[in-house]
Image (cartoon, rainbow, N blue to C red; front, side, top):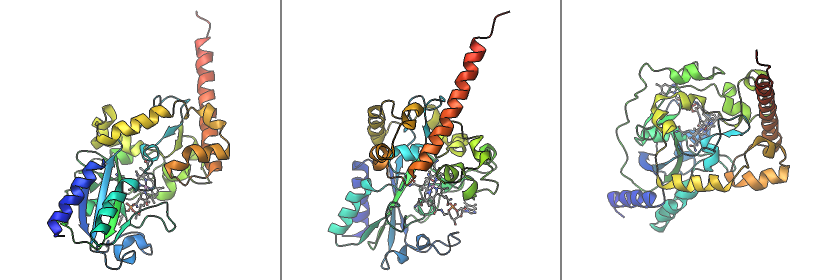
Length: 314
Ligand code: B12
């Protein structure tokens, strides 16, 4: 099929399955990519005949739990709740199917598979013209802020690549860097992974410094995203997209699952049953540890509130 026609077909199919933005980029190596030995740096290490990368973004700005700011609810990132923690995969299956039916190869970027994600998705998204990398290192889209879960396909199909990258609009803004309580963003655009609270919450070793500032967070931290001016309107009122309704329906179905007292009762099997489909690789003991720390904090807060409510009046 002709390049332009195939590109158009992919765009309309993506829209039909609820993908909010899609872009195309050339499948060449990413220069200056920090993971020097990682196969993710060059699409041709996954698919030697690779010509194009398809990058998809799904808006997750509205994926929050009711009461998520209150101490008794386990605070969890939009990315985790969306089910796209390890990349947008399912919505890309029909797109890969279309490419295969036209006789092309198509490899979906899927972090849950052995070997993990095969694409550096933020860099792919920048190359495909979806936005720019903020000082928090995340992709910022003018329309969706940082609230795009990203996914990608490597293919040998020729597509209409984006040729001009979006300008970086962060300019002098340092709000994300200033907001990070664990100082993981001291160098603009570069995340110090081992300091990042999202990383620490998924690691066996949770430093005391992080425990002191994690509040009710049990999976991931979104502090840098909450501080980003490009997200302000989404925090006030998330956009109503095709997928937003589906996410919210799923969240309603969870009821009080995420209350900390409930989560603290979860056995390992219940944890896997309930969250297995979210496709995250957080071990049960790590999850439970976070829940218990957050629960202790909630108990402390409520004991203090009770004491101050019971103060004798003068
Ligand atoms: C590994 C990983 C993590 C690890 C390590 C992150 C890392 N930076 O390496 C951990 C667990 C810490 C993590 C955390 C989070 N992650 Co993560 N993560 C990934 C994963 C699987 C790979 C990322 C990767 O390749 N990193 C490699 C390093 C080298 O990339 P980098 O840090 O961006 O480094 C670049 C910059 O430093 C840049 N750079 C250096 N200097 C300069 C200067 C300028 C001017 C510029 C512009 C750039 C620049 O160059 C480097 C590349 O060459 C991707 C999925 C995927 N397949 O891509 C998701 C992904 C990046 N994560 C994502 C998210 C949302 C998060 C969290 C916000 C989780 C949350 N709370 O919701 C936090 C991020 C906090 C933050 N500020 O970044 C999303 C990002 C979506 C978006 N809109 O950008 C992705 C794409 C997952 C997805 N499916 O959507 N993540």
